[in-house]
Structures are given as C-alpha cells and as structure tokens.
Amino acid sequence: MYFRQTVLSARAPGMALIITLIFLVLFACLAVAITASADANLTVAHNRIEGQQALAIGATGLQLVQKSLGGMSVSGASDAASFHALIRAELMADFAASNMLDADAVTTGADGVTIPTITLARADGRQGTVDLTVRASGGAADDTTVTIRSTARFGGATRSATYNMTAQRGRSVLRDYGIASKSPVQMTGNAQILGANNPAEGNVLSASYSTTNAIQLTGNILIAGDAAVVNPAGQIRKVGNVTIGGSQVVGAPEPEWPQVDIDVFKPYATNVYSGSGSGNLTLSNIRIPPNTNPNFSGNTTIYGVVYIQPPNKVTFSGNTTLIGVIVADQPAADNLTANQIKFTGNMSSSGVENLPAGAQYDGLRALTGSFLLAPGFSSQFTGNFNTVNGCMVASEFKFTGNAGGRVKGGIVNLRDSTFQLTGNARLTIDRETAVEEPAGIVSTMTLVCVSGSYSE
Image (cartoon, rainbow, N blue to C red; front, side):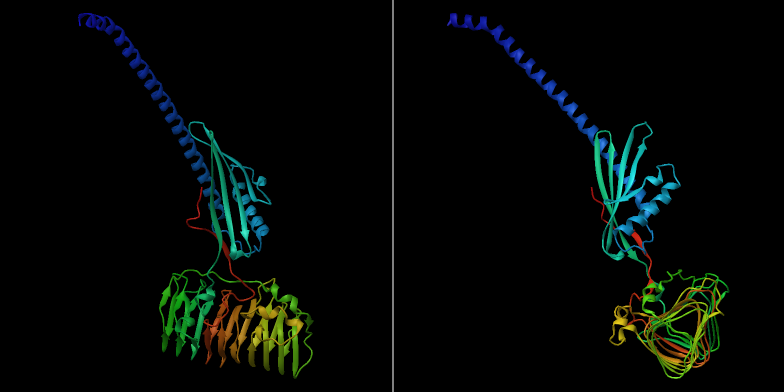
C-alpha cells in the first residue's frame, strides 16, 4: 500500500501539467473560433450593407424612370417598337434638362430602351452604379406591359429589381355627360334634355370661362340629369319654369375631352361629289372638295362616308337618309361662318353597321359609334332627325325650332362658342346602347404604375 501511494504521488505533477496543456489548447482553439466567427460576422455584415446599398441605388433608378414615365401619353403607340420610341423621347427630354447623363445616349433596340450607366456618389465618396432598361411587351396600347429593370452595383454587391407599368385609358367626357360643351349652354323656350334609359344620361356640362353665366336656362326648361359648371366662378342662371332633375354643381372637375382622328374613314371616300345634281339622289362614299358648298335639297340617300374638306358649307335641306357617318377635316383657320353643316330638312340616319353588302363597305361596317365628327365646324339643326346612331362632335351646336331626336352616344362641343337649344328643341341621350369607344374618337392612353408589381 505504501509503495503504491508513493508512485501515485510521484506521478501527480505530470498529470496536472498535461491537463493544463489540454485546457490551454482548448482555450486557444476557442479563441481562434471566436476570432474567425467575428471575422465572418463582420464579412456578412459588410456584404449585407453593400447589398442594401445596391438595392437602395436600384430603387432610386426605378423611381427615376417611374417619375419620368408616369402619366405619359402613349395614345399613338400600337406595338412595342412605337412604345419604345415614345418612351425614349420622353426620357431624353427629361435627361436633357439635367447633368446626370448624356440624353442622346439613351437608345432603343431589341431589348427595349437602354439608359446609360448612372453613377451615384455617397457623402463619404463611395460610389455605386445603376443600369436601367425599359421594355414593352404585348399587343395593342391597352394590352401592353412596360417593365422597368434596374441593375445596381455597390462595392462587391449586385442587385436587380423590376417594376411594371401599364397603359390605362382615360375616362372620356362622353361616359359621364350626355351634353358636354366648352361653351356656355343656352336653353330657351320649351327646350329639353332627357335620358333615354335613366336621368343621368341627360347630364349637362359647361366648361366655358368666357362668361360667368355658364348654363343659361330661360323658359319652360327641363334637364333630366345634373347641370355642372367647370368654372368655379361660373353659375347656373335660371329664369322661368326650370327643372333640373339631378344635382347642380359649380367647380366640377375638368373632363378629358375627346380627340378626333378621321383618318380611318378617309380611304372609303372614293367618289368626289361636285355639288351638281338635284332631286332624287343616291350617293355612296363621297368626298366633298373645298368650296363646293352643296345643298342636298331633294330626296337624298347616302351610303357610307360623307367626307367634307374645308372650307365648306354643306346643307341637307330635303329628306335625307344617311346610312353611315359624316366626317370633316379640321380647318386650318378658325372660321365657323365659312365651315358649317346644316340639317334643315328631315334626317333619317343609321349606323355603318347597317350598310348593305358590297366590297366598298368592307371594313367600314366595323367603324361604329360615330355619326358626326367635325371639329372646327358649326353644326346646326332645324329639322327632326329621329335617331342618330352615334355620337356628335363639332365646334358649335345650334338646335332650333322643332329640332330634336335621340342621340346614341352624346354630344360634345370642342370650342368656347355656342351650344344652343331654342323653341321646342328636344334631345334624348341614349348612352346605354352606345358604343363605348366610337370610331374616330381617340381616348388618351397614359402609363400608370402597377401596384404590387415590384420584385427583386
């Protein structure tokens, strides 16, 4: 027993040293591990910061392009190439006013619109870059998506993000009002404006600033719907037995006024009408040259397009049957005296969809929704027209005597001139059965952001 204890005592210092060395090794390994972990954490944090900086730069690039393109009109775009041309022009115009980059370096190609690399510097002198492309995909203007792609770099980090925009059709004044005029609206005598299906179809709007009496009602007057005035200083002046079925609004929002483009109809007007001939006439797809000043005084039937070139005074004084549409070029000079379309007889009309068989009307039958498109012309009615199968747009309207009938689609006066109903004139507006997008009326298409489309 004594010998064994002596041996153990002699070996104890060596064991202690070994254990101490083991612990030293363990602590050293732990210190190395902690140091390595700290270095790794610092690297991760550094990379994360650079990544966040790259994302921020990329988001800045997206916002830069969104700001330039938001609300941009793309009404003339019909395919990706035309979208790209409009987008490039818009971006060049914006960049030309800044020193950020050379606007002429914005290019178009197979990948869309490419914006040269933009360098952004921080306050500490460190810099990041962003490359931007804009690409349109789809078909017609209202079926197109515009994708903005932003690729940003900061330090060793690269991040990409995209955001979408789309073309949105503006709300035409024809959808909200039966009668809309940039002039004062004057109604006297027993004049009435009604709605065929509901009172709101008889809404009336004046956007005139030439007089405070924007809507002037004198006599036994009836407006089935609202009476609205855009001019906040304007007023609705009522004298006599006046009934307004809806609200009376002053300071109404300025609507989007329609743009007229009759180019779709012109190719069909292949027959020149010299103005000669009287009595019973049957005409098809006619063009009336300047200064012809014809008077259709007999029983006249016209099929297809009546295309009027200014200056001209065109009068329908007999019994006229029109299966088609009347269109006119915008006069170079404003002159409502030299450019007039008068309906003094009885007019019976039907839309282009009712044209008879014949190759000369192929394609035309699909151009529905319009009856009269004549910006720059005065349009005057003294006779009855029963039903007009389409909207009417001109620069002056006068309905006198017993003039009246049903209008499918509404009436728009594009000039601060005259909109007048006198005597027993009576208009019934039918928007319920009207074509939503009439041929020859161009609704403004603008680019808007698509909520929730951001992706990284």
